[in-house]
Amino acid sequence: MIKKPLAILLLLIVFAGAALSVEIIRLPMPKTVGKMTLEESLYHRRSQMSFASGYFSNDQISQLLWAAQGITDATWGFRTAPSAGATYPLELYLVKPEGVYHYVPQSHSLELHLKGDKRPSLARAALGQMFISDASINIVICAVADRTREKFGLRTDRYVDMEAGHAAQNILLQATAMGLGAIGVGSFWDDVVMATLEVPYGYEPLYIIAVGYIK
Image (cartoon, rainbow, N blue to C red; front, side, top):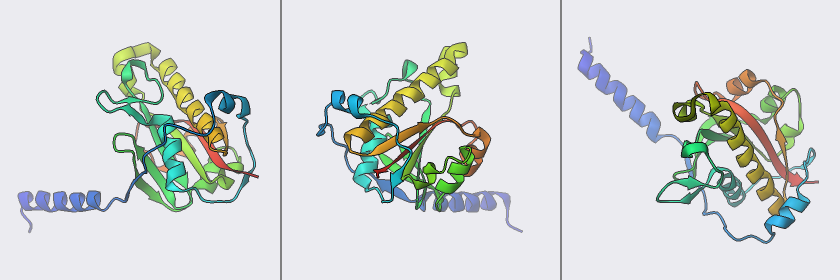
């Protein structure tokens, strides 16, 4: 029989090994100067529901995720989208053909969360809006509202929803500036999206942003 301290040690080794085996993608540094002005992005932004096939490079993914939740002040940890009380309740999941990745703003990197193409399942979870499965990537904005609730109580839902809108608009405008098509999706079964992405307890999906090449 394995003694209890030894059993605990073995479990810790197993968990540590699993943690070390997580695939991490260090994203390229985002650009802070583009070819299209903010005014032009606002003028040209349109919701796209038809996408041409094609994969995104890590440079493209880096720029889009940075626009949503990237760090813009290393000292204070401020981000590209405003957050009530700097509580930062949002968590982003990138859904692409290879799998589902969790975005880590602090290191500007992706952690593999699930393997396999979940875009068709995500499209079905969004009431059968199949353009989601055609998009090169989908960015799912989730929220951990308790982070904000500790500070703002009853006003939490309002503040978190506003923050998700800020991040979503940043993605849409950045996609436009990059010559890509994008659309925000708010119609989906929350529980089915959560099950599809296997997000942790307390992570509530608020928004799906489908991004792809314009036909």
